[in-house]
Amino acid sequence: MGEKEYYNIKLTVNGKVVTGSVRAEISLLDFLRDNNYIEVKKGCDKGDCGACTVLIDGKATVSCLTSALQAQGKNIYTLKSLGSWDKLHPLQKAFVKYEALQCGFCTPGMLMTAKALLDTNPHPARESIKEAISGNLCRCTGYRKIVDAIEAVGRGEL
Amino acid sequence: MDNFKYFKPQNFKELLNVKYDLSSAGFPLAGGSNLLIYIKEKSIRSGTLIDITSLKELRGIKKTGDTIEIGAAETISGILESKVLENELPFFSVSMRDFANPLIRNKATIGGNMADASPVADTAPPLLVLDAKVVAASKSGIREIPANEFFSGPGKNNLSKDEIIQKINIPVPERGSGIFLKLGQRKGTSISVTSVAVWIVNDSNKITGIRISLGGVAPVPIRAVNAEKAFSGKIIDENNITALAETLKEDIKPISDLRGSAEYRTAVSINLLKRAILTCLKTEE
Ligand code: FES
Ligand code: FES
Image (cartoon, rainbow over all chains, first blue to last red; front, side):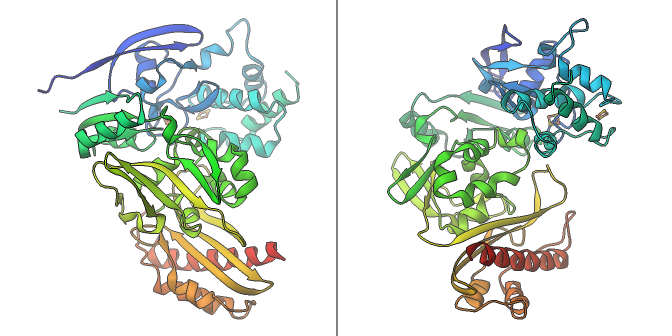
């Protein structure tokens, strides 16, 4: 009685196999952060802010409301899959150029949502961009510069 | 002490058996966008999470005869991408465009949204005006529950402890057009204050058949039977629509809370209903 059960888990994060042992109710967000993927941010922890957005099999979703065990066998991509300091992803370059971040807390999630959008819709209209990022909250920028940055990448500017 | 277990049935029969054995201690886990919140909030402290996402009996969107069947574990994104719905019942796909936000739509499921039985569940008003049926499955068999009789209170539904939602069946209407309007506080939040769905069959401005459903104005999503009676058979114009729409007051029991007062909700729902009906009549021309 009272003894917690643990379950084996194996998934792929940014192309690398990650294994572990987790409790039934653990979220993918907590699993990722416990495994040092701290680029995935914990904001509200209840699906309202989008800071924890990752790609699961190509779709952007909130990792805080994803059961880690349901990510079993899936391909997860976090911000670190996009680019590195010496080789920034066009979206990252655009966010810098268009000053699309201030505190930066929303940025990892925002970039992953933008990545999923561009993967399915390479030249999105402003309205589609606004719709796509409607689950990612930013309390600093007022969104316009974020939309500008994503639009610029869609135009092939970066 | 919180204590959860995880179980992934390998087939439908195993799911029904495990749900029977665990009864109310077995929680179907699909997208997780409700269940994980309840676990974090500690409104659920223990139980077994039954992972239902990959069972084929709970997946798929298809038309069989005059009925569209949507598997309970289909996501809202899946509904939006479905060609079957786009071609056969665009009203329902269009209704789901404003469901929460894209991140949540990628995980929230139609079965989960219905089972959760929120007064503002966004799948409910469109399904109620379509006379949809919730197909409940258990070890002892399958039964259809009319969507309108599925809810028993805020957060409560009429499933028995050994039942799960297998799919939602929607009879494809022969005639008519529908619209779903909602008023939320902010684009992107998962919660609307008040919502109205209507399905109208009309002969120019004369309403020959009408079904009206509302969310957020009573303990559960409701059919507005008084307003339906008031409107049916009437020729609608700018002059009589307000008085007719006000019969809605006999159908609704709004409350005041953080998101709006009862008076506000009443006024909003009357306005939404007027707008919905006028829009439907226009598109039918
Ligand atoms: S931390 Fe996941 S949505 Fe806010
Ligand atoms: S830059 Fe601060 S929240 Fe977006």
